[in-house]
Image 1 (spheres, rainbow, N blue to C red):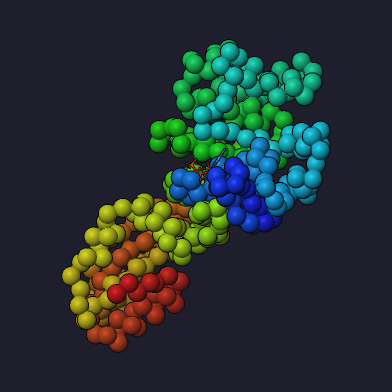
Image 2 (image 1 turned 30 degrees about the vertical axis):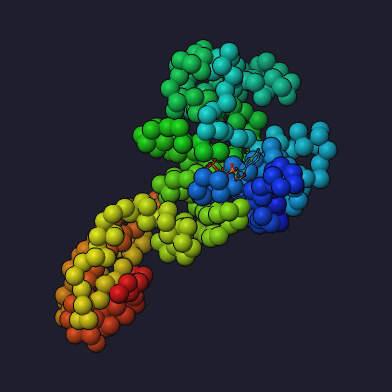
Length: 336
Ligand SMILES: Nc1ncnc2c1ncn2[C@@H]1O[C@H](COP(=O)(O)OP(=O)(O)OP(=O)(O)O)[C@@H](O)[C@H]1O
């Protein structure tokens, strides 16, 4: 659906040049929710703004729905952009226009007739749950309501892609959840491809199917959220995930432990999350275990659990335990 090929973006000239993106390749599939995560200055905003040519890449190609946007003239680009909606961290609403008029704005620009506009805006107001607020002005709305207007406006021209530029970063956690839920509903209802950028792993974990980690203008890790989240490879990805698990994982690793014990991290995914594989296996092999840290959560709607345990007992039996739980489908990382 979206393909970036060897995209480089440089800002400034001569000695003042900053290379925000360096020969970056990225593919987003139709209908998926794709997240890009990275620290401040990594190139996230530049990347998402290159996807609709709000920023024109210095070199490289940007393909959306089979068309290379970088090759289009102004009129062709304008037409193609109707397929790509965008929402922003600070909403970018027209402050002197009502909720209704903000949503109607792109339709009026496209010379859609009045009756059709009314029908479409009413439908969108209902979709985002703002029917009761249609005549209010942005200043009279909460942050979450403003973002709902932003979403409705972005959907007015029935786009195939929705780009979300830090869309929940200005919102409190509860409002963030409600906006993420709305994005997920829209994705499922309309099979809309969604690309979002964020610096919060929680956002990726809640709604994304795939994720790319961006660092210094390049993608350092990419894959299904379950893969990247549960088995992070790159140090930057590990930082994001460890940042989330917080202090408790660090404390677990400091537990007393010697040659006659092994520290292991077990990952349970899907239905296995609720299975008693560990105690069953330990009973069979006769080893003991201490649970040092545990998490249970969801990645989108897939449950997962992670345990840091200390196995204690005969070396051979500890090894047998590890092999058995692996054979039962758990992922085991021997930490020490
Ligand atoms: N208009 C600009 N002119 C010059 N340099 C820029 C411009 N926009 C971005 N940059 C630089 O490009 C790099 C990437 O910036 P970008 O805004 O894409 O990162 P980001 O990951 O979105 O950061 P943040 O999370 O802080 O918004 C940074 O070094 C930034 O200073």
